[in-house]
Image (cartoon, rainbow over all chains, first blue to last red; front, side, top):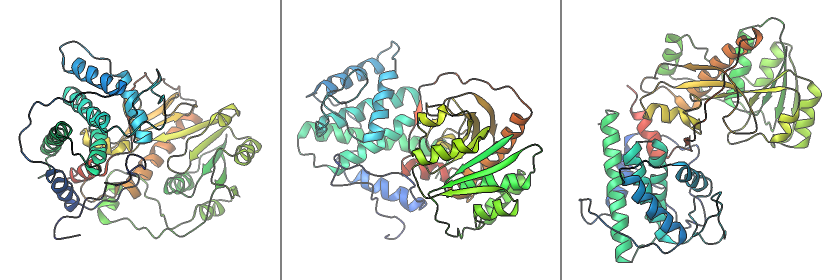
Length: 182
Length: 235
């Protein structure tokens, strides 16, 4: 612990192979929040949300892009399958290239595609913006922890990731205002 | 009615045992099956804010330094200890069956899920979930209640093989705790114990059950950041 913040330690070099454990977390007060904000801000090169696109490289990626389009369109969206994917993610902390109809992975070793995690975060952003359901925000913070743990060198991926972080920071700021936390 | 407390060495189990000890119910025989235990003294004392919250809201505050076996011994309630932490082991299921209880109160270890073997037995299983069902299904829901500016709730229901599913007996909601009240250690087991006692009284009075509507939103282990915000939101 340094000064009035503590180092945020919910990152891991072993992700996504090894899960980050969020169970029975301790309470450290405001220094923890400051540590989280500092960590997230350290990834940003600019402070404005910009429209960014990312090409999919898997069936899951295609599906996530389709969901993003549907969620943000004027018509309704059935969140059942997204909720099921979130359930799978919350158990395994992995996103796979391909899923069957029950959202079980087709191949259990295909979970290292960074684009899938970035697009999953993008989808959760759309879902939370539309619904403000906290389980979407919860999963977003966790998938961003995974992305923050990884080396992101490719330019388009890096822009998309930074955009995800900006949205996440905005959501947390807004939630703190709503909860009257200064 | 024969009631069996199926207990891990948890604060919740101690709360249930002690609230029963404080409220003798007629025509009720209490027994215990304690599994995976190593009785270590819990040296946890409530802070002033927690004590005041419980007093103000007429909530029973357990003494977590008292071992569950001690509570049972004081009341001459029979209990058995099984040296196996797997609640779904054949050994534990056989022991439950041998007790021929009408009602099993589940107070196991965090994250444990009962498998189908339990629901083939004659007894009904009662569980107290720290959230309003069906809208607050899942894990660490007391924190999500606070984030959603909702009062914390507990739902007592008869368990089935599906998680947080089954006929509800009672849903109780409680005032939002004030700043510095210890939620993890005290408030979670205190609220569950309060709801448990009232639900048990309703069961003994043959109150009707009500079915939850289906809801596919589920909450998962809360991220520490959101947990911090929930706690910091308390005034």
